[in-house]
Image (cartoon, rainbow, N blue to C red; front, side, top):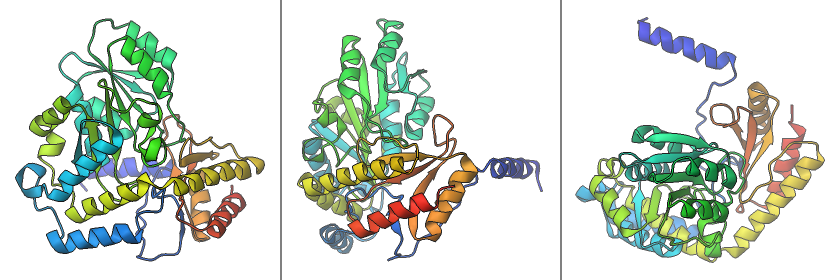
Length: 378
């Protein structure tokens, strides 16, 4: 065995000893597991209208986009989705990527001109963290969801071009950033604000337009919004929405846009159908909120430490990584899929079960899932 592979084996052994090994578990079509691990919050991934739209585009265009967006990968479906997203989110333009991760990398790098200071919330998603690292800019980590802490950082760098980066609903604990207050701070210091709205899109704001819209900030000229299309919209891909000059800059210079194959037209068509349903899905949003409230009541009554969700994500503290793994495995053995989050996915180093609620499953199945989570606790 060569030296480099021996080093990888040692690292794998250390991860296994710490309970940090990760495992791929393929699922078959039509499996009967009750899903509180995926991100299909509104249950639209299997909605008949969404599947029909994707199927029609599949027959029209074939399997893939066949190239990058600037070569042959842009179709009328892509252009129409970008128009729909821009109108929904309240920004002049939107640009679709093949993943939310690439959208975040592209947006952060585009905003980080030479001399820019990036201020990143401590609990930000890995894609935002990696975007900061890849930008080569100076980075300051801000206290989590703390306008006063942000103001102190910005005051220490007067006159410097600065971008503050945050999620709206955070992906581990599901708490909501105080976006209006944070924007007051960034505006007072002439800083830009980038908001990853992935876990709020479809769930918060008028017509589900997200956390930025819920805070009354849609279309603000000093805000850029990113999101994934793989959560409430049930598909795949990512989006950056903002002012016209930014989108033009991304098309001309953004490496994660220029050199990446476009998302398949069938997926894009399915997302467009999901977006149309989402805008009038107040009933599904209300059902999800009811389930969030029920989950918090049930699990707190059972003695668990659980986050209070702003949308569809919540987490239950586990004693440690091995206990979290065993808890999730026991739930899975009884037909309930839950997320298992361990370092480095958790910003504070604690291990959790992460529950992502789903308005598309039956009330009976949802109640059963909560029972199993309680019964399988370590």
